Length: 326
Ligand code: XMP
Image (cartoon, rainbow, N blue to C red; front, side, top):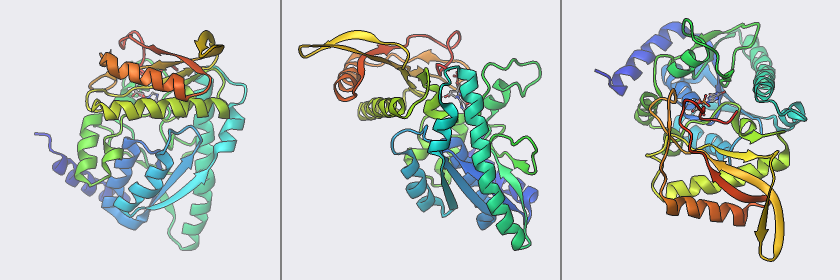
């Protein structure tokens, strides 16, 4: 019989046994998986854990603040933030191919993370207490879709925060490896994490970088961030967060269409809304959102976000579509 209290007790005992008196590092993404796995490990070993948050500039509005303020306040975890926004933008310049973007973001993430690792390793070794463990928020569906299960095809190169460095000098701690998303949320609530983080819909490791169809630039990120914030605000206001699994907002940066606003012709970019209902992200259906909510989102985005003159709705199930566009 599944019960979040039991799972926590079981995992805490298992984590303590694995880690002993060792030190452990964790990468926080702002998402629910890394938040819960980190909180579980913190619950188990307290200050033996240091959390690292890399701001790659591909986050949504307010996410960095949520981690730095709310999450830290509720867990008491020691957090180090790295501002890597310029590095990621430079590495992504001129790249449009989705798999290439994913690889670059994954690579840069590991680089940024390893840089902090080295600093923390030096500090820990000076104190005679080396860091030997790395927390990963890997879920069961990630294991299956990344080809971790026997005979499964690799559909997209999934990148998880803290993705494996090639010369791995750490033992992994993966307390969510057998769990589905709803189970992870129940555990987060039980651990007392902020509702905005626990209730947060899934967000991919490569972030907004794979929601811009075309090259990722600072300007395009700003457009997408604004449109995404409006969509999320209106969905929350309409009380629909519990009904949808997630709603990627995608900027078709390489597409322009003609529009009219006031007396003038516009030639702007479309924004795609991709609301989906799902149990575990393995399959999904498009969510039948109320027309008045869609209309509100569309009006606000086209009025408030410069360069966007059209909002379209993705009505594809998974399969054949994936949830993300890239
Ligand atoms: P797809 O697009 O494959 O997405 O249908 C399935 C679920 O996984 C999320 N997703 C990712 N999550 N790293 C992650 O941690 C990734 O690289 C990644 N790519 C997709 C996606 O948001 C959806 O919930």
